[in-house]
Image (cartoon, rainbow over all chains, first blue to last red; front, side):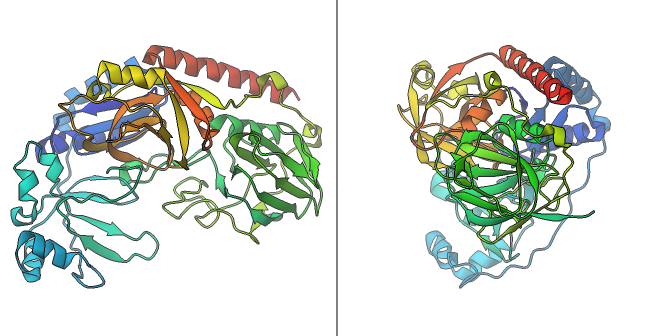
Length: 187
Length: 321
C-alpha cells in the first residue's frame, strides 16, 4: 500500500483461522523488533506493515518476513483473555433495543438473553482507540436475509461496543450490521 | 525545566492545533499517527528556528489565527501562505523573526495553500502522550488539552535554544514549494486497483478532481468523474489497515484521500499518494483541484531517496549558518 506500506493478505474471509495467522505474524514481527518497521496493523484477514524505505528497503523487508514466517510455529501464541463487560440494555443506554427485537420478531428480553449468551472474539482493534471488532452474534440476532445472500460480510454479524472516549460511558449497539455513519470510514 | 509563557491566543482562526511528527507504534490499538500534515513545511519551520526537526509547532488552517507575544521569542512561519502580518505589516514567510512582548501575529486570509506552520525556538510545551505532542482531534487527546486552540489559551515554550546568529535566516527562495490550484499527485496503484475496470482506472488517472468542503485532518473528499468498478465486486472490503495517502473509493465512485487521523477502513483503495507528495495534499483546500498519475513502487522509493538528499542539503545549509 503506497511507498511505505506492505499489505500481507492471508485470506479473503472473516474467520478464526485466518485471523490467527495474521496475529501470529504480527506478534512475530513485534518480537523481532526489526529496525525500519514503523507500525504493524493486524486486521481481520490482513496485516499492514508500515516501514521506512530509507532504513529498510522493500526487498530486504520481504526477505526478513519470509525468514520469520518459516520460524513462526515456534513463536508462543497467547491464549485469549476473557473480559466481562457489564451492559445496560434499552432505554437511554440502548435506544435501538426495541427496534432490534421487532426486526427479529422476538422479545427485548430474548435479545438481551441471546446477546449475553456467549463470549465474543476480538478480531482486531481499529477505527478509534481501543475499538474492538468482535464476532459472532448468535445466529438469531444476525440478519438472515442478508446472511443467506452471496456475501457473508454484507451481514457482518458483529457486535461492537461504541464508547465515548472522554466520559467512559459504555453502551452496546447490537445492529445487524455494526457500522457507523462516519463519512470517511466504512469500518 | 523552566517554562515560559510565549503567546496568548487572541483568535484561534478556523482550526489551529499543536502537531509534531506524529504518534507511532499504537496503530494496532486504533491510535492513528496524527502529526503535521505537511511534513516538509513543518520540518523547515523547525530547522529555521534552530529546533530539533520534529519539535511541536502550530498548524494553522486557512485564516484567522491571531497571537500576542508575551515575551521575546524567535519564530518562523512556513507552509501555505495565509498572509501573515506582524503588527499589521506583512511578515515574510520561510525566515526567522524576533518578536518582542506585545507583538501581534495575524493570519489574515489564505492566498495559496491551506496550512501554515509556526515554529518557536524552544518548541511549544505540551505533555507527550504516547510519545507525541500531536493533537488527535477526534480522539480528544494530545497537543493542547486534546483540542483545537481557543481564544484566551496561553501557549508555553521552553526558553529559546536558538543562537542570535540565526536571526534573519532565510530558507532559499528556489527551495520554497509553490502551492498550485491544481496539484499533480504521484500515486502507487493498489491494493484493490483490480476492483476497478480498466476504464475506471483510466478515468482516475486522466481526470481533474475538485476538493469538496469535506476536507479535514482525517481526509480529503474529492468530486469529479465517477471511477467505474467491476460489476462482480462490492463497494466495501473487510476492514483493513490504512496508510496516510491511501485513496479510498466508496460506492459513489468519488475518491477520498486518507490523512493522518484514521488507522483502518473498509472501502476499496485504488492507489496511495507518494509519501513525499503528501505535503501537496496538506495544502489543498475546498475548490482546489488534483490530478493523479501512476508510478511504480521502485520509482516511488527513488523519489523518497531524492527527497532525503534534498533534506540533507537543507540541513547542511542550516548548520553552516
